[in-house]
Image 1: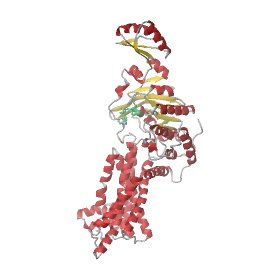
Image 2: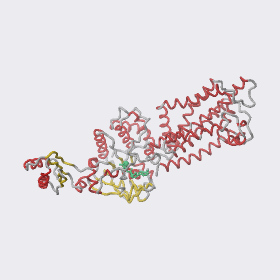
Image 3: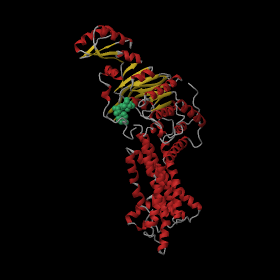
Image 4: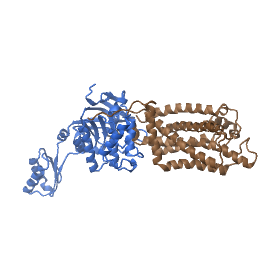
Length: 329
Length: 283
Ligand SMILES: Nc1ncnc2c1ncn2[C@@H]1O[C@H](COP(=O)(O)OP(=O)(O)OP(=O)(O)O)[C@@H](O)[C@H]1O
Ligand SMILES: [Mg+2]
C-alpha cells in the first residue's frame, strides 16, 4: 500500500444492469500531481469520480484513495477528500455563508475555524458581496465557485473535480483555472475530468484519455498531441486544378504527407504561426490562389479520431444530460 | 500545504445527533426562506377549523353530550379540535415525503454522502425539522380553536402531555413520509403518493366522527388506528368530550397505545428509510 499514491485504481469495473460504465479502469495519481481525466460524454468520467469519492461501489476491481480502500474504509476516504460534482451541490435556499457553515459543521470542524475559513474562501472566490444572499439568486459561475469553496472548507489534501468549468463563460473559466492552479501550488492533489483537451492541457501534468470505460491513452499533453500529429495547416484553393500544386507546396513546408479532398488541402506542420507566413509566401510565389487558410490545433475530436477511429460525437447517445433518473444518483 | 483544519471535540450527544441537528437547521432555514409554504401549511388547518366549526358543527351528534341544540354545537367544537390536531400532524408527513424526494433529485445529497458525517443524519435532520415546524402549526391551530370556543379543561400538565404526544406523532409520521419519499422516482409523484395514504388513515378514525357510529367491521380498524388513539388521548388530556368508546384495548389505554405505536413505527420506518437511503444513493 503505497501511501505516496493519492489515488490507485486497478481493473475497476462498474455495471449498471446491462450498461458497462467502467470496463477495467486503471488509474494512478501521485501525491501533489494534477491528473486530467479526458473523455467524451458517457465515457465513464463521472462514474470513476463517484467510485473514488465513495458514492458508488465498484462491481469489480480495487480502488484506494490515500491508501484507504473506498469500499472498506469509506469514512477514512471521506475525511481526506473534497468533491465538486458535475452539478452544483449547494443548498438553494441557504446563503453562501450558511452553506459553508453547514458543510463545516458536517465535517465536524471547530466553529470558530469554520467562520474564519468561510470568510477566507468567500473572499478568494469573489463571493463576499453575495455571501449573505440565498444561493437561488446566484449566477451559474457564482454557484460553481461556491460549490468548489464548499469542498475546500476542510482543506482536503485530495480534490476531485468533475467538469469544473462546464457551463461557465470564458472569463469565469479562466477564473476557475486560476483557482485550481492556486490549490495545486499549495500542494493539493487534483483529479479533474473534462471534455476539453485545452483544459486538461492547461491544468494537468498528466492526461488520461478514456472511452467506453477504459483508458485508451495516457501521457502529457505534448505527448498526446504528438501522438496524433500535432497542428495541421488547412487551405482551400480557388481553382481545383491547382490542388495538386498546393499539395506540393505544403509537402515542402510540413512534416508529413498532405491530404487532398477536392479543393481542400491539408498537411501536418510544426512551428505554429510562423509556418503560416511561410505558407502564404510560398503559395503566393507559386501563383496559387486560396480562399481560405487556417492552422488547426488538435481538438478532442482529433484525439478521438486518431485513438479510436470514431468521433467523440458518436458517444452522445440520446440520453438525458442528467442521466440519473431521479433516485439513482 | 497550510496547516490542517482543527476538529471539534466529540459532542456529548454524539455525532449522529450533532449532524442531524446541522441538517435540521438547514431544513428550518429553508422554511423561513419560503414563507409562502409555511403560510399555507398554517392556513389550511385554520380553514378546517372554521369549516367544521361553522358548517358541520352540530350536524354530527356526540353521544352522551349536550342536551340542547346549542350545547350540542359547543360540545362538537370541543370534540372536534383534538380531531383537527390529530389530522393536521398526520398530514405533516406529506411535507417529509416531498422534501426528501426533492433532496434526492438535487446533487446536494451526493455532497452529504461524500462527507465524513453520520449516516442517516440527512433523514433524522429532515424528520426532526418537519416535526419541529408543527410546534408553530399547533400554536396557530390552538389560538384559532380558542377563538371559536374550544376550551382546555384538563389542567396545564395534561395539556403539555397532549401537545408532546401530538409532536411525537408528527415525528413518527415524518419517518413514514420520508420512507415513501425515498421510494418515489420524482418529487411530483411523491407529492401525490405522500397524500394518498393519509386520507383513509385520518378519516377512518375518530377524528371527526365517533367510532361507535361506524359499521362494525370499520370499528376494529378505527380502534387500532393510532390516529384514533392519538385523538382520543388528546381529548382526554385536554378535558374535551370523548363520546362513548367501543370495547377495544387501545381505546381503553389510548396514551400507552399511542406511545407504543409511535415507538414501533419509528423503529420500523427509521430502519427501512436509513437502509433505503444508503441503497438508492449508492447504486
Ligand atoms: N445510475 C446509472 N444507471 C445506468 N446507467 C448509468 C448510470 N450512471 C451512469 N450510467 C451510464 O454509464 C456510462 C458512463 O456514464 P458517466 O456519467 O460516467 O459518463 P461521463 O464520462 O461522466 O459523461 P458526461 O461527459 O456526459 O458527464 C453512460 O453510458 C451512462 O449512461
Ligand atoms: Mg460526467
